[in-house]
Length: 191
Image 1 (cartoon, helix red, strand yellow):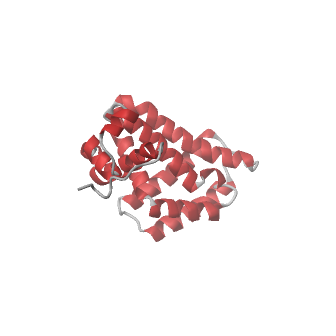
Image 2 (cartoon, one colour):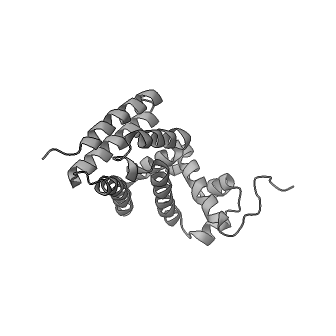
Image 3 (cartoon, helix red, strand yellow):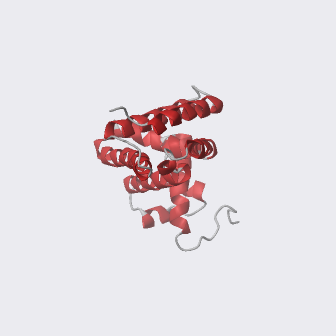
């Protein structure tokens, strides 16, 4: 009998399915629970597809970190934060509430990088991209900015998301805090 989750995928769908499945597996089981078999089962494909697309576990993780970052940036629309804080707040909250696995996966990778120096460049790139998105949005609007200010604003957002994922704050508290942060971001750095 055929497993109903194992369905034929169109060309290119298999890679995307594996990336999404890796996020879900790591979010649920941590990095130690991420095996080729667990990812393949979650994606509903044969585990040889992982070796075909990525070769190694580390390459799969690196590709998934890049994919999760692009997806998260696209969903939250960070570049629009300074111009329309209300829209950004709504998009950020929706992103975190609807796809928390993306952020859990990224935090897992950040923590793992503290133990594995080979992951540190990918994690630095992750944070640089997020900070660049905030800076780009501010620049497009002609708002004053600085590297330190942009990094501090993203660090605040990052911390709020981590607090929410750790159940230290509620979705309502997250929303209120992001709204308050929006006012600070719109005001910009003090010279």
